[in-house]
Length: 264
Image (cartoon, rainbow, N blue to C red; front, side, top):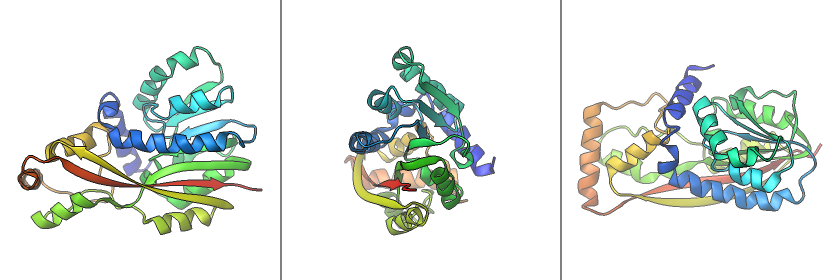
């Protein structure tokens, strides 16, 4: 396991019990993907379904309601997240023997089991090697299978970047792929794709609360090597809150949804 992957797992595990209380943007992205799942499920070929990065099961519950009695596998790199997901789906799992949970690093996805559908919500931006993982996912799909996923892309956190420039401190948001590059890389692996883009706006009561929400969802882990000191962070928060002058902090998230299909 790479060092970055280990840190990501540790961060999300620490945030397992606080995640749902702060994951408002993630919930909006879940709703977006589940809307597309409704359209995909009617024409879906026979076979199992895998969710990569199930987290606390916000999306898993909707998947289970829509796609039973198929064999459903919910996976995440974090054992603590898997436990919360199990708890959330306990009502459904009591009724079905076709639901399974697996601690899995998506970048080490085995090709020995194949699926009719692989789903992933806001997980792929954490991959160390996006292209190689796409190839693994492609090989793990049955012919006619789909990989449907959402991903944060370049343009997210515009307000955060802007205020960091004003204060003169580095922005510790992780670098994100641009939409065109995302589509190019997916198109280089898959036979057919559809692309959709959504802008999600979330309000926070203060700068301190915004950074707390990152910590409590496990998404504050910095994988690009950018660091700021505690004093720089305090200065950034003070400046940002003065700038807001009692107004809410509005943050922009740019979310791409891609439906990628394996034809042969």
